[in-house]
Image (tube, one colour):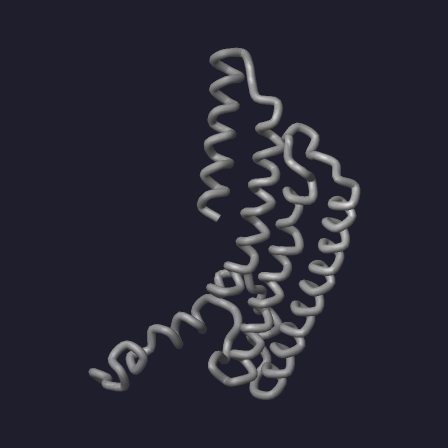
Length: 168
């Protein structure tokens, strides 16, 4: 992800300098920046689920207790897995059709299927991360899927930091 961010930053800065200092520019830089951004976002989705740093709206979930919270969490994970599987399937069909057509990108001398391969790859990684999160939830290794105060309280608890010894 850092590589794609660096590529985007470099190309954008180069384009600004070329345009405003030399009254010139690179025809292909916008398309390259767009594809780099797509790779960044699609890989970042899976990373966000892995590190549980994604955005969580907990208006309803924070009010649920006990079994209701557990069932709602499981349903949420199930919906996320189904969504990511559908997106994986659709993007795979799209990329395979691009492969059959064999055309290149508009401004880059690279096959379009290769540039769009980030779609099925990103959604496959996202599906794997949701399945991993679901497995940890079913095992009981984690109780809370979101991030924020509840999770940080659990992670920074005195028992977790001192191995069960508390100064209180």
